[in-house]
Length: 239
Image 1 (cartoon, rainbow, N blue to C red):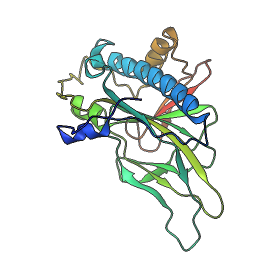
Image 2 (image 1 turned 180 degrees about the vertical axis):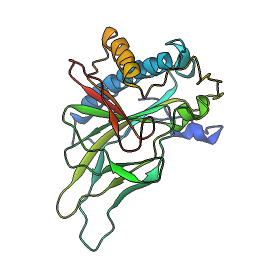
Image 3 (image 1 turned 135 degrees about the vertical axis):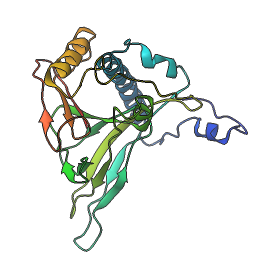
Image 4 (image 1 turned 180 degrees about the horizontal axis):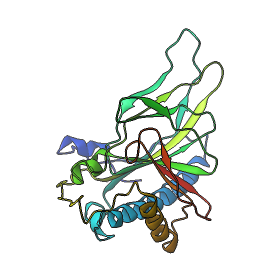
């Protein structure tokens, strides 16, 4: 937890402050703290791998992160809806930071918009995470990496849906400058299978714990999956 800033200036610094933990759930804080630690570590390694895929140094994005980086997580419950109610859980949007890591349950409901404006399901896969590319990464790469437009549909009836997203963002006062990429020659087309495997190899050597990296819609053909085989323990889907 971080101390609250009194009379924040600029006002967005008011987002900084201590968390409010429920006293009737004493095991919640240590569990969430451990999740934040692991999610931050994995997100950092994935960002390093993406930098390499863009023919940049693995440390390229590090300059936007320090002890004041804006990381946060949410514990989300979607209540089941009746047949006469809207199924909107979260409307269509993009995540604002570099990356968003999502742990979802088995219920489903996450959907991704393709380039043609169609919505496709991102079904839960056991022992996997989902990564969304955020708007900051889209800005830095001049749109070469596209932020994921996604939404969530609430379940029907008495079913509940739970998800835990982790948002990997820079410090709140970070200045984001786009870079020029030579997408014709030097930059790897990271939707190609061999380049996904190259990212895997990097993560594997750096204890990333990645099994498969899959790119859906934003980085590959509409509604299709590119899969790289592996032998590790955790899958990561980029959508």
